[in-house]
Image 1 (cartoon, rainbow, N blue to C red):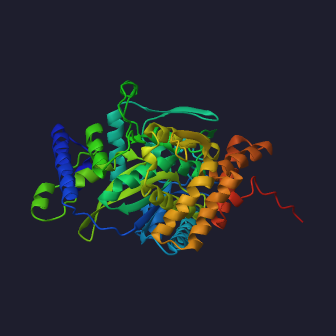
Image 2: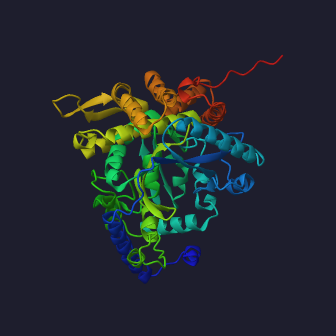
Image 3: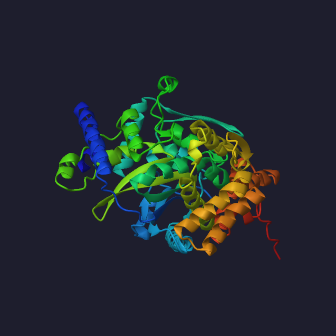
Length: 505
């Protein structure tokens, strides 16, 4: 496998063999599900955050190799481009003061990483898209020096067969092309993992899909790209377009993009893995030596390496994950909806809201996905990306009459979803102090109609009004964002605008 990754060359037989192995893996997964071989409930959650490296001027710094060498911790890893890092927090059991513990771990880890980055004149910023990125920053020569990124880029470019077109029509419009997938690196996100049993998987995934739009509405933090003000959360359209293997003709035929929301509610984790095989050709047809069915016949647990690798090249906003821990297989729902930042408190508040809400919705006697058309959930997601905290959502009407109603996202969250999230967290055994603190952050964002995206755009426009050029205003907004991020107070408390210069004398 390692030689294939380094060489990056595949022949026709590799793809056919890989497809055959994928089918054997899918059969293996089906047998594992039928034989009830999966881990029992453990209430485990995990957290990953993608980060940006910036200089004192607010501009990106292509130094992740040097910074990681100084950090020297397995908790920190490379990401797609040289201005990216990722921090991984070990799994925690939901309950007690878990969110306060997570916040403290993250503060310690990021403060240490920021000190190490300072040794090479860089700093760490958590933000969905760094406003100061330029097209020249997002080129293949700035991809991280890791074979798998180079190989993935080469395979996606080959599959597309022409330049990638970025066309996002928001407050302003951005149209440009790219010869590589490097623009994807602009998207830095938070990934929330929840280990679930097979019997619970579909309910949790459906609940996560139903609330993806709400997550974006309260958590949007990516309004700028290449100097243009676009959507409140511009990551989803950027990610889709920068990884799109479909030329226009295949798009016109309705071929599905590799970055997608999905198209239906599911009844099993198997549904998603099966869709991945049915709809998406292999990008990395790298075959493992293991025969999953022989391993199962011998009483073992197969790694399903090809299935796992293929799943990692289909970019669902809520992704199924198969893993093995201590020799026992398990399933996770990986929620990839949220942008990074603005502060650790905001990240943990977003996480608490999500974990509480999906539990409560998954346990409802009349689940939301039985009353909400999937197309409405998709439209909610798109509306939230465009309009953020000011989005309007379609949601099932309360009471006996049924049907759906259109409502402000902030009204829906405050009146209906925050109480559900609180009940869900109580169900996990999370203490009231944690629930009140972190759900209170979400409530205040709604009350003030403020999130990271609204703060960024308001501060940028203040800077323009003060006479700064667009580039200078974006850089100043980024520097101010970094200062307030490191101070750590949640974004709804941040003063809009740049600080007044201190008079001399």
